[in-house]
Length: 360
Image (tube, rainbow, N blue to C red):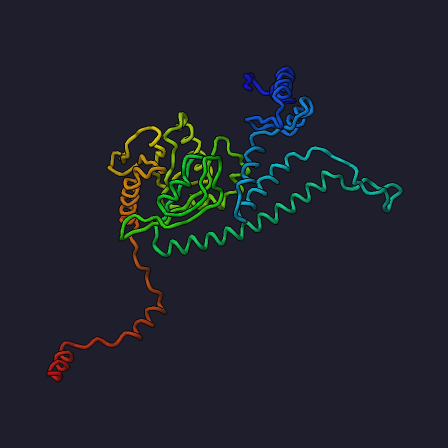
């Protein structure tokens, strides 16, 4: 159901007439839940539920519920729980008093004790602090792993893009991994890192991350910051785009917006137009005015264009290494002293000649 209004109704978002019409349609269709494709306030959600007599979800709660079902790793489950609690904390609007303490105290009359809403807020705040502490520890572990990869002189390539654009399928093809891939929203929430073979002489590290979506709730961006850090610290982003989508330009803009939110918009990027098996586009590399790859057309399903993708990443890698030469660090004073002591004294030409003559 669609409705057009100049501004949202503060009580029910759509207005009493539309809500009544919505309730009739929902009962005729015998629906279990009504989903609004916008973010509702707590009061609006409660008022609509009371008027139509059917549970109501807004866009944020729907996305959070999908994330809850998809999260597999411990870090993913912690991130989703934190996001859900942050959202729930804005929904605590009832000030129940059934847990009030008895009157008493030093004076003749004591005040009421904590209300249920206060207890709930305190419990949620305590749990959120525990979750943040656990996520910080996991983020430190992820940072240690990232530094270990960087010390190995490996370039990191991060796959990003709109949800269901085919990132995980492409990731499996280029790394020969077996991560879960399906035709559904947010099939992958957990970051995976694997070797991406470019040639016999070179491999890079590829990471698969959570997909983005229009209006991604701010709580999720905050909760998944440690996971999205893989994209922030990448040397190259492969922005995977569903070439068959009629709204692909809008999806590209949404992904760029989220990348800007997490401060990854300055990382070099190559657009990867996936699903050319549906559009009929031929595999090719599109270059900018300087001759550098800016887009590649591929099909992760059939494997078409993967050689072109490897070539584009190889060209980026070669240019990146030219701009960032791996120069050895300067030795400290104590290392120079130890080196001088360890090295034998160099012989003079006369001493070397005398040694050769003795051998003859």
